[in-house]
Image (cartoon, rainbow, N blue to C red; front, side, top):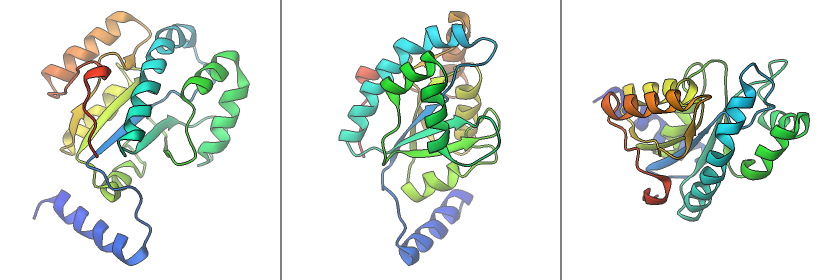
Length: 205
């Protein structure tokens, strides 16, 4: 039995015993680092690139929720270390006009999932892989910023864990267009990701 099969067997056993199973879906959607106060060195460039992307992600998220596909916010922590996504959302939505605007477009709903990460990858030192195993996910739709940093590191770690990858080309952004183009070439050539536009992404639970 493979490592993933063993892990899923353990998770299924724990789920049946505890009654704490979250959504069950072969597909999950990740939104990376779009809860932000935009107080960092290249924030203006990131915000400018991310704003139209966020609107497309919001439309894709709406379709995902309608299809029963769970949405997971994978986000940096801010300030003093606390595992409290709600507090971070509250801070970012009030800290700056950019943070408030982004929250108004793409703020998490009560029943969305949240993972706070200490480094670039959503998998490093977090419970993301465990959550995805509970859900039963085999395919990840990865969106967010920055395409050439946190999205890329998260996609790499998803790839080595054998997840199928869909990274819609119009739902990622970097501070520069060159960074986004580099990322798209990497996602297709190295990770074998599906980078079709979000309007063409098929959503199945």
